[in-house]
Length: 466
Image (tube, rainbow, N blue to C red):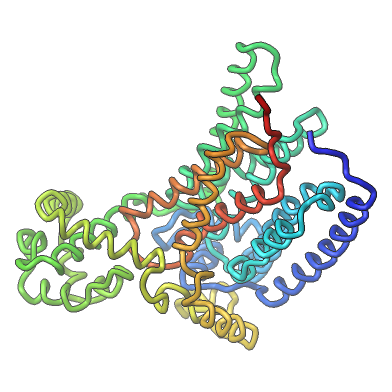
């Protein structure tokens, strides 16, 4: 147990808590005022348009469009999303930083740990990204909120806290729908919630049953949320996952063919010299669409059936392994920020979309003075460590090292699960990234910073003398 705070520490803690509470309230209002109704890219506008017509037109899952529709749809839904997102992210940081508004603990916290933790909370990354209306941000916020709740339950779970179990369960059940790879983040956290409930039961059989019941309820909740999303936005008949895999394989074929001397594997699949030359001229490790939008390349790829696409891809991976690994390594380096970030971090903020979709969603395509200010700030930060994912992988590596060395302490189980989920999510992009869009790995960055914050402020585990 942590030592009781002295009167001096309690006074210092109350002062810090009052200042943080006031600062957090002002910051939340400023962020909502700056971002609302939100920063909307083409994909966001598509999601809002899907809410208007109640059916999917993009190849992504309909969950994000359904969430925006549940929040009011159109400009209202987007604005509410920004407000909720800001409240959940800042609120989560506040609860972790103050250990649930514990003035005594906050007063005992050494100054260097307090200020370093405060810097993590005020990372410009989060101040910018709470205003982006998109599924990667939703995924990160759901995961962060669930982790904060699990830390609270790990400290204490009693009859008065079942409401928190329900809220955490709701976030965890919704999490897999945010993006195709999101189950990699959610599964370790599902196990933690099941374990936290099970350990309160007496006897091993009851613990096993309780844990299985929690997992069953989460699975049923996940299916229910998916059904509700499909009822709100009718999905496309073709699976978004299969479409995504087709784009990944196409990008790999283009990358391998562009870097091989003989144009394989595209040549064996029927690509002519003009098509191969177009691949070489337009291929970029930063994104697939630089080649995809070239008529010669797109017509060749679209002309391949699913079976031939898979066969061509597998032949290339098997026979042109060095070209495949080189292409994948370059794409990953771009995603992690080892190259220029000019095409990887949006310089345009505001609303941008297909004119018909913008009109029907009740939006105006524009970049107002607030958006231009955010755009200038982002441009200035674009080539700094703040907006490069290798920075957050370093943070994640340090967090992992500390957890392995410490092997215990407050919230250790939840921290380990969140860290594992962050690593798994990152690993999923090693063979699948099709663009260096910074949003892709935002959930990994968010979880890395959140766990680092917790390690900074949580009580140190007691040392056992021998």
